[in-house]
Amino acid sequence: MKKKEPLSPKEENFCRFFVASREPRASAARAGYSVHPERTAMRLLADPEIKRRIAKLENERDAKLAEVTEGYRRLAFGSVADAVKLILSDELPSESELEKLDLTMVSDIKCPKSGGIEVKFFDRLKALDRLCELSNAASVGENSDFLSALDRSARALRGDDAGE
Image (tube, rainbow, N blue to C red; front, side, top):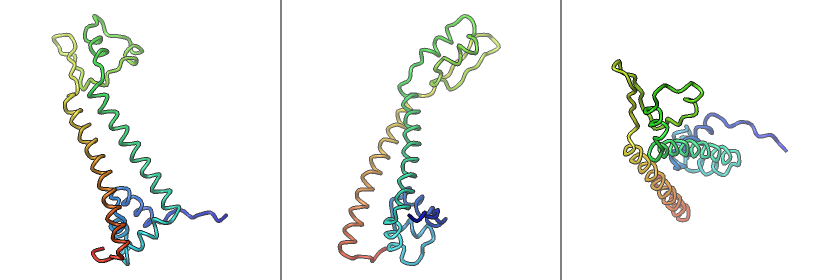
């Protein structure tokens, strides 16, 4: 079995542009394939190495998005119990006790000269707004991917390369 060489910089760029836009022709053109970008894109998308790289990039993107979404979920729905414990305690907890506290919801802690502790929390409504935006963007992305694929298929069936 012949070992496949690494992707060329143009092929790597095509993969990255394709994952971002899901537009084969535009991705090929942006990657530097100026002669017949539509045909080049179809050839590249048929290559198993290109398919693997695109799948890997999509998985990385999805993992990052899931991590960001989880962070906003924690801000929107997380507990402030540990922060309240810290505020109400008579003395500061030890470093090991502090490590065990979940202070995800805390955006700022100050110790004013007048004494005590001032704690500010992240805005739950802003976190909920961002969650909604992320959810809507994911839905729109799924729909536009489907519609783009449908449009490309219809053009391919008609043999319509005009406008590409």
